[in-house]
Length: 125
Image (cartoon, rainbow, N blue to C red; front, side, top):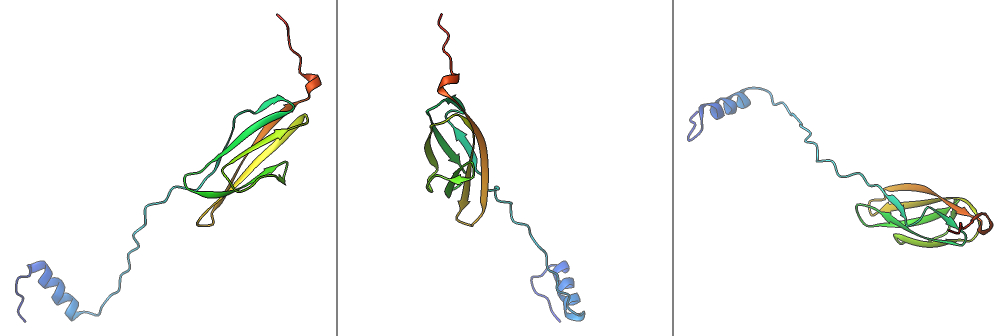
């Protein structure tokens, strides 16, 4: 058996492979982890007197579709922003659910405190 242009290590490996039963080794090479899909709910106000208009924005690391809920009742479309006017006093839980193209879903929630008009007093200087 002749080995041309092979190093001694390569020749030995070839010889050992030819003379021994084969062994199949599988090595898993982990892929770099992708950033986790998450949504962040932002509001331009979190408290105020009724009627209180609030602009909500959902921030995600990639494009997604959105569903908006106020006190567990669906109120909005599928866009990343929602403008909603709270007409009565109370505490309202606002939730956005975002779903990316891979089908991953995340939610984020926040509370809006709306004061009754009668409970808001203005101090005169």
